[in-house]
Length: 411
Image 1 (cartoon, one colour):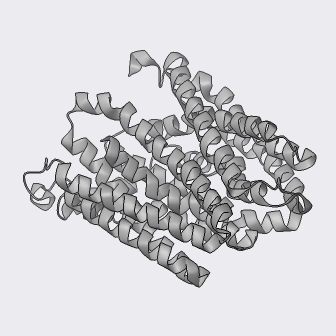
Image 2 (cartoon, rainbow, N blue to C red):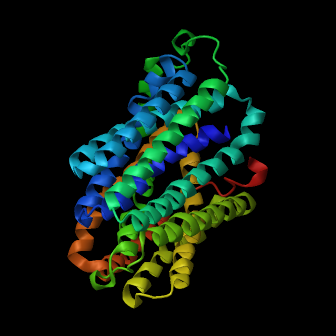
């Protein structure tokens, strides 16, 4: 399970986070960068469309191994495409990688539920989350630092990223070999023979989702609760890397990896842990407003940095850590609400549809972020982000939650 969820998290981070830094260092303008890398979320938005295929064809283990092999090959292709400096070619391979990664997510999560008993699933839930976070730190932090050090040592930015992606390909291939040898085969028969979920039930799960009471409010919450963070996230790496003359902080690639990919992710993880403890103690309803405000308001640290352009790296560390700590704490409310709204006959399918809206909530604002930043500058852009905190407040006012939901005694 640890290696499986590391292998699940790493491609996601490479596609949706590392790509931003790489394209920025290769010279892609902010507007194009934000648009094209935001569209990479699309496979996670639409993956419920083909998740039934993963359920009824072959075994989850087969899908895991095939997708890991495909991911290793696609990252090799990315590495070989970097010297061409062809954005179209690199983006095409990134989209292939994204679809393989989203399919791997479906298979890995299904394998988790199939291979482990209910009790063991509870035992491993913290372990899987921890190793997914380790993959995030590795992808956002370690890989960016490695690429930055190679940039400095080689004096050749494309070559540095070519070698970094080649290393990622080798790592995914090693994980494929490890899982080929060690991953258990819990499925005794082909899933199609088990007829676990007939196609008519799949259609009925979609229909019942959109007929749930309060569906309009729920959709607005899923799309708008994270709007400030969703708009700003694609511009954080460019903001750290752009020179002060362009309104950025002028950090090196390695420093940006340490700030956002390491310190930021650790603070995000700590915030998530604190959020889980608070929700278990007080329930979602009592935590909703503190979590909503902690998610939205710390985005103000970027407006502060855009205005003051601090020269001390420690100030940047503290600001990013404060934002990510608040976001991790506040995001707990979002995850719990998805579970709350998904409860019912088709809980698994409805939760998958909620995660599709979650991905869409990141994709759509991200597509416009670069254009807005280029028009407004970093100061104006982050001022707009703070104004959009009103959207978080508005949708939080609209939703209704059972007062006891999430408390420990209710499971």
